[in-house]
Length: 424
Image (cartoon, rainbow, N blue to C red; front, top):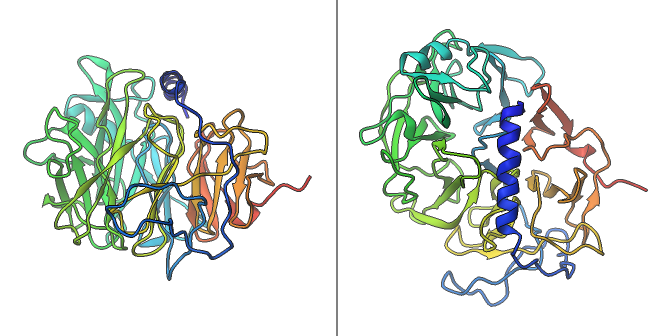
C-alpha cells in the first residue's frame, strides 16, 4: 500500500473510531458453540416477518458445492482476484501491469496497463497514485468468464485540470491482454465519474454498475447497468442479475469517488427472492473506509451471511449477520471474544470466512491474527507469522489463500491447512 492511500485510510479510521466511540460494547458473555455440523436455527423465528433475534454461534453447515464467497470492492487495498467460474484463474494489480495466472499461481503472465494513462488523459483525467505516473497499479481486476484475453480494471484518477481531491474510480477494459485499453462508456443517465465497479456474473457476461449522474442513490431501481457478452468488444444496457449460485444476493455499486478525508463510503447489498425480477435493499450497508474485508458467504441455496468486521458510524451494524431464508430476514450473530478477560468491542479487523468453514480475524489492539474453528468457543492465535500485519482480504483459490503484500505489492499465499491454533 502506498503512503498516500495509507494516510487516507488511517485518518478515515480515526474519524470513524471517534464517531463510534460512544457505542455500547456488546456483551462479553462467551458464545455458545454448536457441535460441528450443526445448523444454526434461531429459536422463535418461524417466518421472515419475525423480529431479528441474535444467534449464539457463527457455525454453519455447508451444502453441496458451497461455500460461495463474494467480496465487496475495497478502495484502499489491492486485492487478488479469483474467477468465480474457475478458481484456478487468479490475478492481481501490480505497478504497470496485471499479473494473471491460469493455474492457481504456478505460472504468471504480465498484462500491461501502461496504456491506461493515455486513455485517461484523452478524457481529461490523470491516474492518481500520490502523483501522476504511467506505472500506476490498478485497484482491482475482474476476469471475463468466457474471453481469456479480456480484463476489466479499476484505477484511481483525478481531473487533470483541477487535481485531487476529489478522487474518482474509473473503469477500463482490454480485449487483447493489455495491448489496448478503453474506458467503459457510461450508460445513458450516468457519467464516467459515476462508475461503481465491475460484476462478473460467473456465467457469460460482465457488468459495469453506475450511479445516476450526480447521485449516490442506493435504490436498486435507480442503478444503471451496462454489460458485455463478448469480452468488452460491445456493451449494451443491462439489468441487475442474480449470481450463478443461489441465493440471489449481490453487491451494489461502490462509491464512485472520495470527496474528502473521513467521508463515509457505504456499499449496499441487494437481494431478490424471485430470481431477479424484484430487488430489495439490505440495510444497513457496509462501510468500505474501515480496514476490513466485506463478504457475502452462501452456505446453501437459502443460508447466507454478511461479514463486515470494521468500525462503522452506526452501532446497528453487527460484524456478522445471517439469513436462513435467502435474505428475506437477518439476525445478528454473536462472535466469541479474543480472550476470556476481554470485552467484545464489536470490532473485528480483517474478519473473514475461509472455505474450510473457519473464521480468521485480527484483534483490535494489535496485529495478531486469530483463528476460530467450529469446535472452539474462543479465538486462538494463528500458528504462523506469515500473514500480513495489515487486515487484508485472504482470497481462496484451491487449497491456498492469497493476498497482495502492502509493501512489496507482490502476491503472497499460504496453505489453508497452515492456519491452525498456536500451541504454547
